[in-house]
Amino acid sequence: MESYKKSLKLLSRNLRNQQTDAENKLWQQLRRKQILNAQFNRQKPILNFIVDFYCAKAKLIIEIDGGQHFEKHYQLKDEVRDKTLSDLGLRVLRFDNKQVLVEMDAVLQAIYEVMLERIKS
Image (cartoon, rainbow, N blue to C red; front, side, top):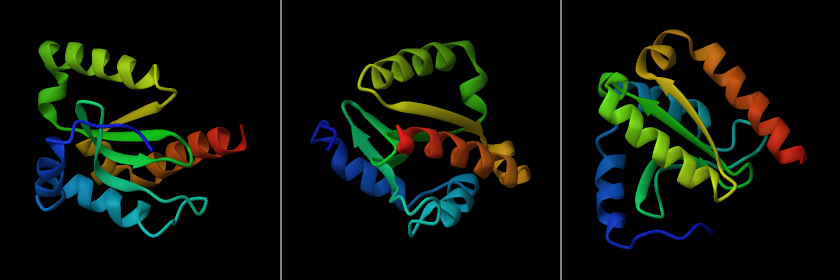
């Protein structure tokens, strides 16, 4: 189990109750071990971060980015965050809201392929 800052627990619980439409739509496809019988958690605290979706079996994080993530400031923060998580052996996949809402099949295919690769290893 990945360690996390205990003070994030309440915030992560609140975020689970305030999902975006894109997060909710993807969660319907990830929950109940629908992909390779792997369990996902949503709004999971890891270190000092709360990640949108986490699969321990594949050591995979999935982030759904809103429009603010296209701003330079957020891109730099995301880069540092992804590097920190990568240093733990975790893989971060990022999709934007539009991809999830409009191209769900392609998003699920990308997730499936990465999970298949990581679970086999």
